[in-house]
Length: 120
Image (cartoon, rainbow, N blue to C red):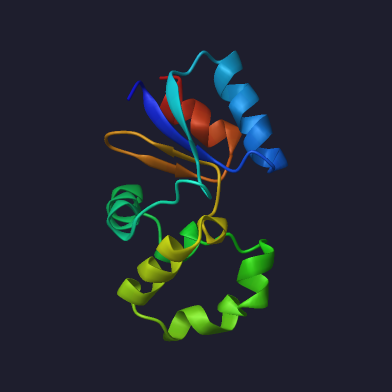
């Protein structure tokens, strides 16, 4: 794998915008389709721990699947393990895009934050 791991859903406008930004900044990355090659529970656990973010931040809260499953109400009653299993069950539940580095994980495209981490 070269550079960072970039997880995206190609039909997602934000993912396309992010990919264009990465290319313009000449960031070296390996691309991965988040639905066709969805993250495993083990990967998600490592990334969640590496990110320092609450696990809830890994859920695609604007996605149709998240809404149809009424997860906003259900997540609080679920254990971390149950949430990880759920995230691993369908790539569309995972917030995207994601960039995975050796010592960081970026979730959702925030250009200012990404610049600080990727362009140092």
